[in-house]
Amino acid sequence: MAPSIRRQRNATRIGITPLVDVVFILMIFFMLASRFTHEGQIDLSVADGLSGSAGETRLLLAAPATLSLDGESVTTAMLAARLRLQPSLPLAVKPVEGATIQRVITLVDLARAAGVTTVVLTE
Image 1 (cartoon, helix red, strand yellow):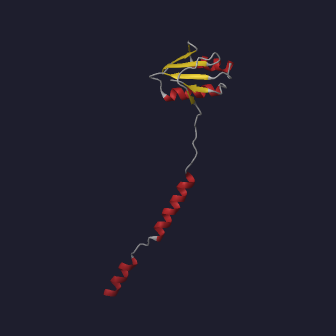
Image 2 (cartoon, rainbow, N blue to C red):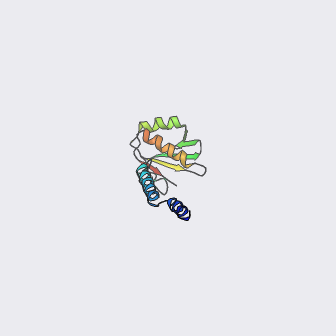
Image 3 (cartoon, helix red, strand yellow):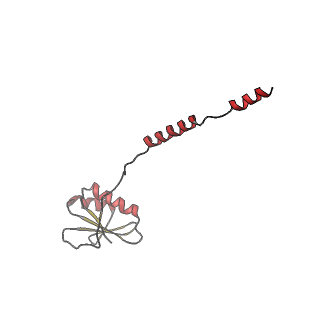
């Protein structure tokens, strides 16, 4: 009886080769399923302050819901309409304390949709 007990213990060993195969298959799957691109990047230039040039449209984001375009308080719809009139002018965006990054990105997207090609963030 002793020899049959030894055979059963040896038969229950698990080989490591199938486990390594599974790990490699999972690694290949995750490599193929992942993306290595940076989606949603926006090219912005940052300036020290408003340059003061006569042809530059200045947008001041004073609070989460307050916009000022060239010193005049505007709504988002008014901003889009005014930017469509002169899309070739550069837009200088100056967010102040309390303005969220998402709000700035939303306004930059609005400007891009209106045809503005140059957007500069200022301090």
